[in-house]
Image 1 (tube, rainbow, N blue to C red):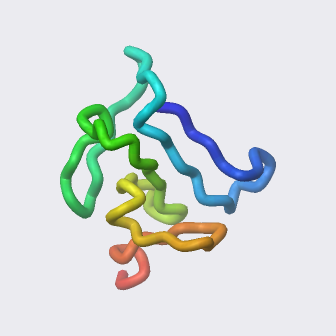
Image 2 (cartoon, rainbow, N blue to C red; image 1 turned 30 degrees about the vertical axis):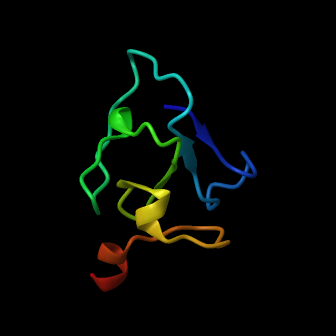
Image 3 (spheres, rainbow, N blue to C red; image 1 turned 180 degrees about the vertical axis):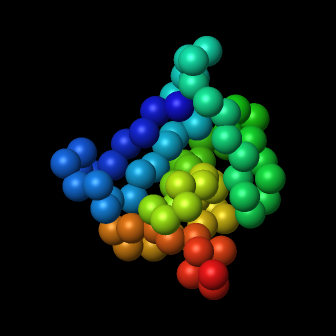
Length: 79
């Protein structure tokens, strides 16, 4: 799983992960907490984003992120 962001020095930037990148054996597989799809099984090439508060992952389609610099999931916003 390869993580990219627009600025590596800003810890508050949205972290996106691309499913087109090859996964190493040492990488940890994650499940989207909205739709329950697995990162390793996502063949659509979608990006994945991590909640800045709870650190859980979801695919970009489920997250409905726009141009925000940080992503907080609905579970953390409601809680």
